[in-house]
Length: 113
Length: 117
Image 1 (cartoon, helix red, strand yellow):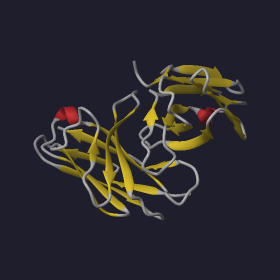
Image 2 (image 1 turned 90 degrees about the vertical axis):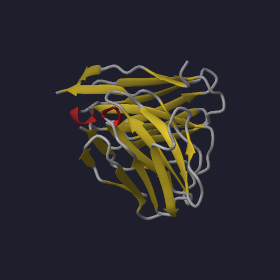
Image 3 (image 1 turned 135 degrees about the vertical axis):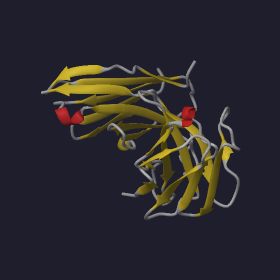
Image 4 (image 1 turned 30 degrees about the vertical axis):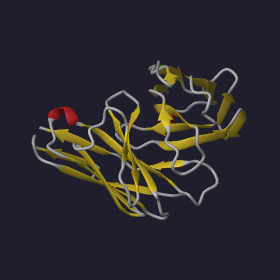
C-alpha cells in the first residue's frame, strides 16, 4: 500500500464548476499537508499549505484536512481553463527544512471553456 | 518567495555518457535539497536527500553510484547521472526548503527533462 493515494483521473469539468480533489494517506505521523499544481513539463508550484486538521481558504481554493480519517481535499470554485493542470498532494511528518515530502500520484484536471 | 533554479531545463545525451544537473537556491541558503524523479503521468518519487557538506541520503532502490549527488555549498546541489541509459530518461526535479520561513513550504526547480538516446 502506498503511503499516499490519489486518484490520477483525468478529471474533466466545464468552466465554472466546483472541483474536488482528494488524497488519502496511511501514515499517522503526517502533520503538514500541501497541494501543488504542476503544468506540463514544469516544476510543481505550491498552492496551499495546511498544518494538522482544519480548513484553509485562499481565493478560489480551499484546502481541508481530516486527520481522523487520514483524508485531505482541495476544492476549486469557479474553475477556469487556466486551472487545467496536474494537482499533487504532498505530506510531511516534519516541519523542519530537512523533512521530506511524500507525494500522491497527481490528478490531471481539464477545465473546458 | 524563495526561488530554486535548475539547469539545464532539458538535455539529450548519448547512452553511456554522464549528465550533470544543477540546482541552486537563489535567495536563501539550503542546507538540505531533495532530488525527485518523475515519469510521465506519474508522481514525484524522491530519489535522495542532499545534505550540504556530507553524504547524500538515498531512498531504497536508488543506486548511489549511478546518481551521484554533491552539495558543496549552501546554495548549490548537483545530480550527476553516470553512464546514462535510455531507461534513465525522465524528468528530474530538485527542491529545497527555506529554513528562514516558519512553514514547511518546499520550492521546486523548473525540472530537467533528460533524454538518453
